[in-house]
Image (tube, rainbow, N blue to C red; front, side, top):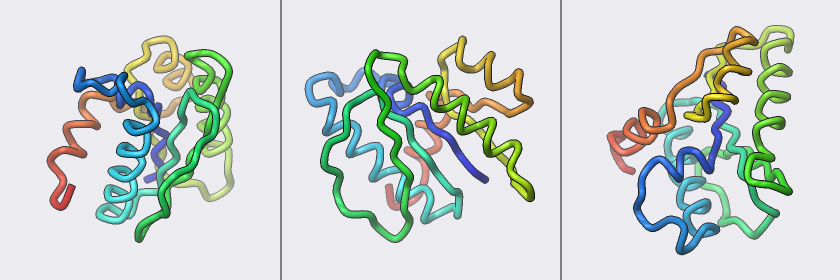
Length: 131
């Protein structure tokens, strides 16, 4: 499956103090997504409402990181663009978008692509062995 992840939505799905270190929270999510991709074989792209910053070296599986700015919802348009491109790619496989943003979810569903809630996806990450 190709997962397109609304990163800030997943990070914000749990009030664990992430706002005290936004780049640290983003790095932690990327690490967890790499572990998820390695464990499941999913192809993952994460979209972050942020300016680019240094990221740790990848693990066994890579995760595509897309920085979108300016503005708190800058990633939404990038996610829709990527979802449309994945859907229209010849020979493309199963796609899912992870978000709990209702406006973005409506746009994605209009493309015929399923939406996975951020909190449900975060629980899935928490339950995976080795994470």
